Length: 82
Figure: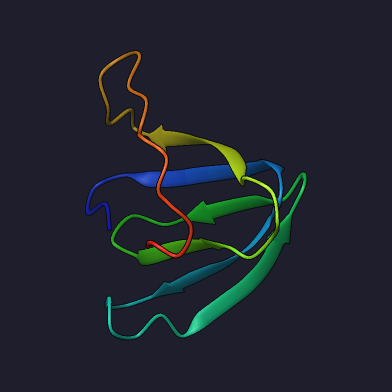
């Protein structure tokens, strides 16, 4: 959850499920995503993205306003980790 920034996600490869909600224990909104999907996560919204495919899920993220230092790269999570 990012309290002060909106987040844009674009799926470049793979498929998954995006979950969102008002709390980490109440991710009651859910969408199936795949190649070329775009997701906007409003500031203050709890969210999760689960890879449901057989190949790595590749995506990029944009924060508004910018939230991370230039060049930040997050490590890959192992399958089944959220």
